Length: 295
Image 1 (tube, rainbow, N blue to C red):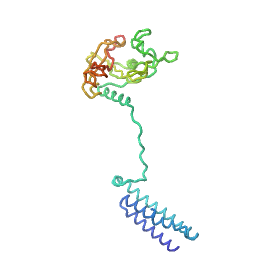
Image 2: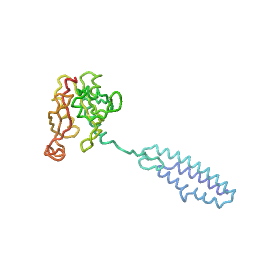
Image 3: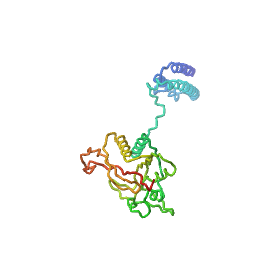
Image 4: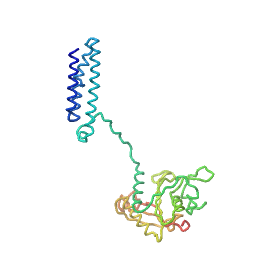
């Protein structure tokens, strides 16, 4: 018993010296293995306890517990001093440090596209304006020169809500223009992105819920030339290549004149392919000058 007691005292001094003399985490972990590994010095003493008389087993067991407590304290203090240094962080992997939480998921392609569109228009002086998905009949139709029974309403198959004030799911983001112009004076330069809803059959190019980017520019001496320059700059930045633009006459109740906007097919370069239906052009948007009735 006296020998075991002396051995534990010696082990305590030796362990403390080895820990303090450790120069990095690798050497420190070797000290830990020396005493608490499968064949470690304290491990062997603990294994021998079952062969000792009860009184001695209790005594030695208590002393080994004190040794473990002492060892753990100075070990953790030394370990903390190493972890604080960036050199040891790079050279040694501390397996006791909690792992970093993995970031799962990613942005939806439509979200990425929307952010890219917003960034481009903001870079050329436009502000982003949002509006509600649920609109009144006045903002969605009447204020945009589409009164009740107007034939143009047939172009928008509308989801009407069962409410006494005739609310609906907006069929375009144009109502945001009206809401903005009610509270702001020219000059105006805005875009209004968002969800729109139309009661249409789903096919390769149609869906009942889609996204739309609406633009509005109001100032003195604004012409179609201004629109063409802005939309050309947008397509150049969005597709990261030069594209040709074609404007053709069209009709929208809230613009006069109205036109559709097409660009050179990005797949075939204008030579003709299934994507552009062999025309060399792909329709991208509808546009026009603000109708006098809406000014």
